Length: 449
Image 1 (cartoon, rainbow, N blue to C red):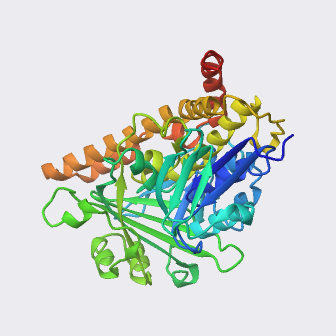
Image 2 (cartoon, one colour; image 1 turned 90 degrees about the vertical axis):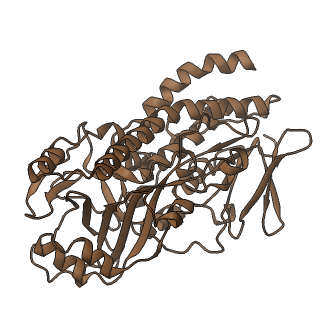
Image 3 (cartoon, rainbow, N blue to C red; image 1 turned 90 degrees about the horizontal axis):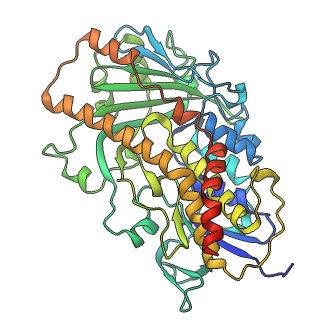
């Protein structure tokens, strides 16, 4: 085989999607993959993140077994993915259950986000990660055969295919679809993670992940694994506002993200909730505030004359609902890598076992475009449905808020018990979707080459 790579892949963004995609591709014969990250160092920032069975299975499929370890992954000992309790009485009103046969190691897990990032980074070849590379512009080479990425430091890189995995405010997405902007959903989220010892003295402290519901706000509490250090505890306090109400112009223009929040504001939100919950909120040492944002679904993920695509929030930011974003990004990354492997090597199988013998195709641009269409067919119908489901839910909540509807306790309990079954999100089988997409795409591929 020639020493020159068959396929060069540039990934913009070193978040969950970008790192996972690089892991799925690095080391494969003939593929040269590089990640370009705008920050100068990958600081350990962030709060809690959940991965469902779908994301955990994909990580295991890629050999990222350290991410499933109990030292960083907290799972409810009851086996319930989530427990729902009443805001005033602290009683369990409802629980989620896994629907399919789910191995215990694939049960929904919560992480301190930096621990998950560190677990992924352990599998990334450092020579493939380029920091301080803030995306500036993108264009094709003069002959149209490759893509040129330019960065704000004056440097540039070329690749056969580009994956924009640069988050909800994706610069790669805006380069091709400038009218796309993230918009505030109305949800204001206060997130905190701190040593569990801070709240260990509080009676009836939850020892599992619990979601408390009130009429117009919720509270998520969960222990977190310590990653080899002291065990942690997470608080996610959420309240719905009207994004069109006067006084919130700043949030509508550019949603707040990861700024220092007001503890007094959080305490006021929950001042009439159960005493145990008020005690936990009172003990909370700090908080960060986020205005959850979403973006409209895209008509297509195949951009840049068939050489550019997107993953994670860059492709389908849904506003953070259902704790689905992390697993969606991981499954995107796997499907992107498998699509390239399949089209360029005919390898349809586990990414961790792919040992394809690559050949330099004369029709490389056509094959790249075919791979990106295969990736889109594997993922977009599913993520479109997620985005629509979240948007419909937010719309209904805003309608109640704007109408001034006062929900009775009986109505709240009924809403908690009749929640939509979300197993189709958290137990989604990306391998099955890929296999079906391959069946519908191979005929098209052959006809176009």
